[in-house]
Length: 154
Image (cartoon, rainbow, N blue to C red):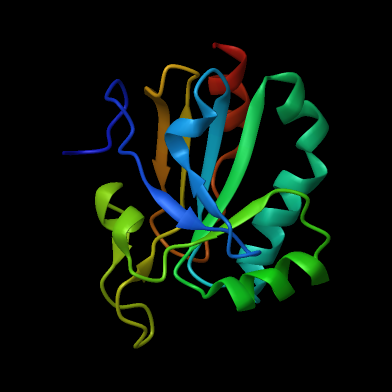
């Protein structure tokens, strides 16, 4: 199954930073912004997730829930969330299931094998992917304006 615009988003259950399971389909009825990021504590990842933190009021007004997803452990994600005051769930895809389902696996980034590419998906309340962006380089941030436009269109 390919995670492309217009298709049903692949479901998953991943532990959050508090080791509590989060299931994507449980957000039914709400829009979801999935922000896949390569690694906690890297500068571009921090900038991206802090952008979503700072825009949370606007995103909540669009009936959107934000989830950050990386292959980091829940323990690392908990500290990353704490240091950056991130008020949304960071999900640990340590076993690399979600990055495979969403086709955002980076096979080799500076010797790190099988981590996430930087990608953002907007999923509507029915679970259909309405926006997909996978950046060309892990050093590139997503086009945030397109995320807001996708949410505004829902």
